[in-house]
Length: 130
Image (cartoon, rainbow, N blue to C red; front, top):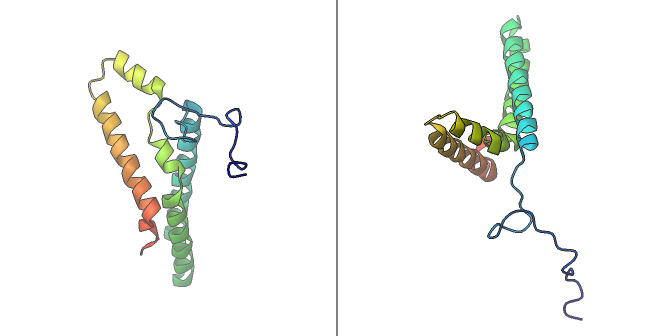
C-alpha cells in the first residue's frame, strides 16, 4: 500500500548520461536553431517598434508606442529561448575545432557564462524591475 503510486522501472525514462539529473535533456541542434530564430524575430520586432516611436508625430502617440515597446522588451528579456540560443551545438564546436579556431574554448566559456547570467536574471525576476 505504501508504494502503490510509484512508477515501475519500465515507466521511467532517462535522457542523457550517467550523472545527469533525471528528466533533463541536452538541447539538440534543431532546438538551438529554432531558439535562435525566435530570438532574431524578437529583435526585429523590437527594432520595428523603435522605428514606430521615432515616426510618431504626437506626444500622446509617442507615449503609447513607448509603453508598447516597454512591454515588448520585458517579454523579450523573459523569453526562455534566449538561454537556448546562446548554446553551441556539437557540430559548431566540432567545426571550430577542425578549422583550428583557437577561440573555441573561450567562446564556449563565454556563452556558458552568458546563459547562466540570463537564466539567473529570469529566475529571480530581475527583468521585472523598472
